[in-house]
Image (cartoon, rainbow, N blue to C red; front, side, top):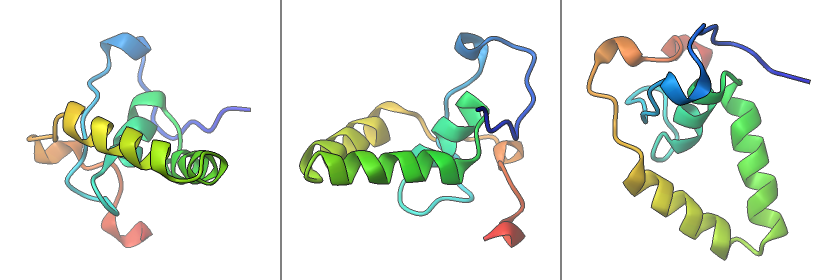
Length: 87
């Protein structure tokens, strides 16, 4: 079952992986991954929360930190994924 919200004809490896400035809860990692995968950001956040609970939080927090440092922030304001009214 897929959760497409972002249609992009480019392959996954050709899409830019960036952390958006808006909307983000902490660092924008899940929102950026959701956009890159073409999934709703809530699905990515839920998957990350399940991963965190299943691994006693520490590995998931370390993974999030590494992704936060590794994924560049989007500098283009047009990269805003969703309307801020959705929150």
